[in-house]
Image (cartoon, rainbow, N blue to C red):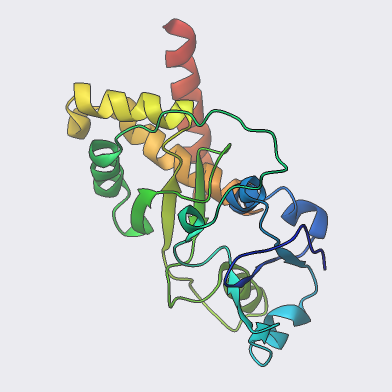
Length: 218
């Protein structure tokens, strides 16, 4: 377990997984670090089941940062951290529509992220759905066949997302093969960061090669 900084948040935030060192690098932590919010890193398998019975700490309910929306906008930034200019956020409405159309039932939803500051994408469980790590544990032990589709969050301040957002408004997204490949690559990137593998490694490699070839030809 790892506890960081002083918290003025109305919840006891945590993230669970197999390796504390890997958890500390999770994209889900970025917004919390930026606001100086403490997050508990839970790396023991029993922690997920312990949390079913111990639901709060110091009067604050435990809340997984990989599930549901965040309320980071309501938390003042940590005054001890260096003040950095926040990048302009792109309008993602057209890009989100294009990604939803392309990915279909592979994702439950696509939306702008409040928790990302450096990474382009992440996957979360929707509010009320099973937490990402608990789902992973149950599948590993054969107690769950298929997990529920997750929510793909996009960082509006990331250069890659801004570029794709611009492309989605200047091209017919339904006919843009590069944009279609990018949608799948973003989903696979979010899976890889969580220690998972792409659903179809061959398609992932093909799409990555295609996008890289287009980039070098530009």
